[in-house]
Amino acid sequence: MDWSDTTRPLKAHVRNLVAEACGKGKKRAIMFPAGQALDVALFLAKGILSKRTKLHAIEADKDTARQMWLALFKLGMGPKAKIHNGPAHELSVEEETDLAFLDFCGPGTREEMDWIHSIASKISGPKADVFVTLKLNNRGAGFFADFLRSISGAPEFKMELAKVQGTPTTKVTLDGTVFNEESTEPTKRALAAQRLALRQVFSGLRFNMEHVVYRDLDTSTGKTQGSREMSLIHLHNFRSAQDRLLDWQ
Image 1 (cartoon, rainbow, N blue to C red):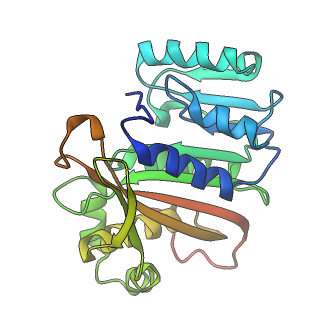
Image 2 (image 1 turned 45 degrees about the horizontal axis):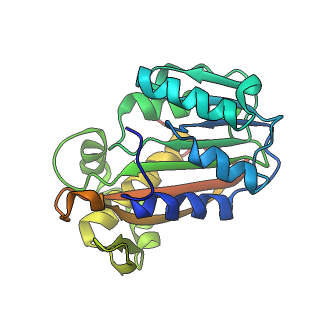
């Protein structure tokens, strides 16, 4: 799905947050540019990417992948871009990569987390930036719902939960006004579970981790029903750890 900035105001808001936090001059990148490649256009303008950057561009939908290739070509990225038309977890990453913007937008699956774990050594250099967006699935079934139930009593989860207290949720009204509200307790628990899972996925490494929570809304529907809470989690400043207490299972 190619989301328009005009009907999803928080897409541009989150894109700008990533651009502000990301290091410049990336040599290799993994991204989900979608049909218009708006993230790539902004990152080129900000000096995060250049026309020399080698880009893995992921898109599962065949028609959107064609649109994405055309958009990348118009941006001058065509010669350096490799299109992966399929699920992200089927992409093989062989080279050191200093930007991974993993804009999943879904609730997260075991396959996706296993994939991140499998490429962790390739995307965790000292100057690497990793951004992950996930739906905060604080109700129902699914991988993260099961994961949360399995670790809710663990000391590591309680420590992570303490770190996310005070996290606001950025929301938008139907007229496009952006505002913050206090996050609900289920949202904070879901966020803590995602953070802990990423610590396990990158076991053997220490890193800085920041996050934001936002409630995505399609204003074209004329209603707030169906909007969903999302997380954007940023991992950076990777370095070796002395312990492996949080191995990914």
